[in-house]
Length: 325
Image (cartoon, rainbow, N blue to C red):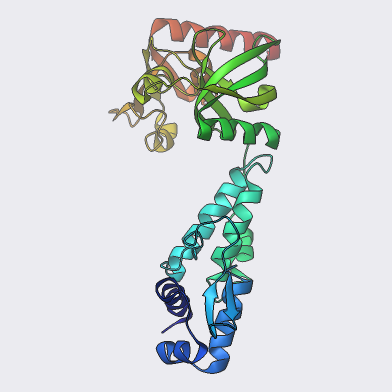
């Protein structure tokens, strides 16, 4: 029986029996006295299990904090294999790197510590992953942790939010009352899909543009997932809209080797061309973000249709040429 199995066995015995003596634990686990003492110390000190020795009953039992249900304690992840724990540590490391502004750090670190405690290489596993896995985030905009926490709290409690919002597109600041519906992490930044009670419609808010946020007592309005997806997921990128057009893009043979394997939109359609190029069709409701992705490919991307998108790209290229020559 390995260490993880022993931990699980001790946990199960204390749940079922409420208390158990040292000698009986030795017999059930079939280990030495020193090994059992190390296991109990490990569970207390590394796994934070509230195991106490009760002199009156001459046995070990769980001591739960006052006011918390007896079944509230649980040892996390004891059913995971070492490889599964390594995979979870990798995911947590990815999340830490995506976490611009350290918004989730206080919640991630205790879980990482407990997963490390389940591994025999507890002191090195997480640090080794941090050294070996590198994530580069571009154009991340900082969000004050207090704003993130209040938005998350309102989402979980289904309460409305009172926001002061500085819209970068117009440069104007407004006060909004919104019903939060969905938190979105997109291209290294956080956004909130919400019902805006000022505009009486669905809106998307960038969390970094929120200058003040407070949770209200009023219950949040509910919007179906279908309606949310129609508004926010039908078009291209983060910009919302229900009036969708389809962009037909043609990539050179050189860029086709990359774009043929990329997902620009869940509903995209792609096909290889006889000359080795690649044609991609994607829906969009607002051209702004799609325009940026088209221009980064330069002459290697041709807009075939619609004509309006071709004109926008042509105007942007002409403006760049006039500016830089």
